[in-house]
Amino acid sequence: MSRLLANSILLTAGAIWGMGFVAQSTAMDAIGPLLFVALRSAIAMLVTLPFAIAEGRRAADGPVIAFSPGFVLAGLALFGGIVFQQIGLVTTTVTNSGFLTGLYVVFVPILMTVILRRPPHPVVWPGAILAFAGLVLLSDGALTSLRPGDLFTILAAVFWAMQVILVGRQASMTGRPVALAFVQFSVCTLLGLAAALVFEPIEWRAIQAALPEILYAGAIASGLAFTLQAIGQRYASPATAAILLSTEVLFAALFGAVLLGETIGSLGYLGGLLIFVAILLIEVLPARQARNAAASS
Image (cartoon, rainbow, N blue to C red):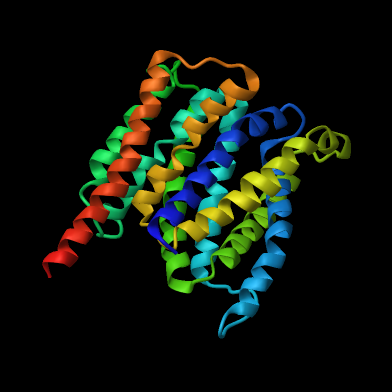
């Protein structure tokens, strides 16, 4: 797969996630965050199962459904990110949640450097700073006073960063991105359901009220988007993927303007431009340096 196609897949995942923030927020009017996570993950698991089986049958060797401890770790990171983001949406706004979730753009290269001792390409650092500045401007350059939901969302961003790193490593090492997505959803389903049974009421009428949001978040925002993420990250570094995926906030603003009639201020347009520049920076400069190195060798 070409670098351009892989990055386009990651951008598509960001666009799908951008449409999901409203669904995640409105679902909380009917059901609790843990039950919502369990149900959306169960749907995503069912959606990806046949594709994971088909992927396994095409593989030269190994089981039909690939499994490894790394897949489980990625699932745990995904569960942390989804749960804390969902809990945060109970007491924070969609705009704040989108902005604070975007902090994983900065956390990914930091974690890669501190934990893995693998500094990313130097251009990623200014790219991450530009993307982060774009996210700030996209939220009109200011946040309301931090609420408990904001703190939960910042914690979620740390888990999202770990998930991006783990998915990148596991997808490239195993060559089984769909199985990776399936295992992640399975982990989230089991943990989410167990937690919901302990901490939240489970009522069929409430589930029916939130069913449209559950179906979108499960089949599209989870099943499709996270599988696209795993596929795209086979051919992109975690830091590059983080910046591309962070466009979910830009897409959320765009879809809000087109579908809901929401307006984007001048600072928001400037923020979108900075994110676009960051994407071009991390896409064009490394590729050009690689071509120059190959030509001089």
